[in-house]
Image (cartoon, rainbow, N blue to C red):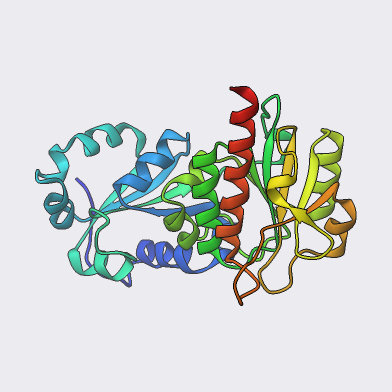
Length: 275
């Protein structure tokens, strides 16, 4: 019989909340949280393992139009779940970030990739982000990376962890579809050079227009923070510096917007060459 949790003081709910709020707890346990059936489907399709599922039948039944227990989603999920707990609507509404997540929250096991784990295409295209601060920006970049078919996203010297719930939500599943690695800038520079991947740093100073720069060969575009840009080690390691022309009075774009522009320029160039 499934245990029913009705108190937010329950130790299992306290752990769930800690995983949502604290990167230290995610590091210690090796777990992260996904919320909603869509997120969970993407996560499972990418090969991640479920640790625990919490579901609220009242909300899940409303979302699916049929009882959660009899839903196709529940039946597909059942063989993959080691542990599941039913929670009251009050508990679910306390722990859920959004009200439209179909009554399901899961704790998943992290899967950490290294640079050596990446499987590259013949002409790889890599997006590198140095010291990204805002998980929402990283999630949006992953979403664009999925859409543009990049080989991988590398997050160097990160200021947010890759399992942050805001990152996962804003990526709309791309956090699980795009191979993503966290490492130091020094390690990434060495890896890129050893694989013959040209380094294009996005910067305003001493740079060429991005659409005049060849991205048809093996390429990595490097983005820094909106506040301070890239550190000198990346500027010095670069094969070329590129910029997006700014025609207004504001001299910068959101990093996720800039990254999307550069990613789809690579798509445009490669399709033109391949057609």
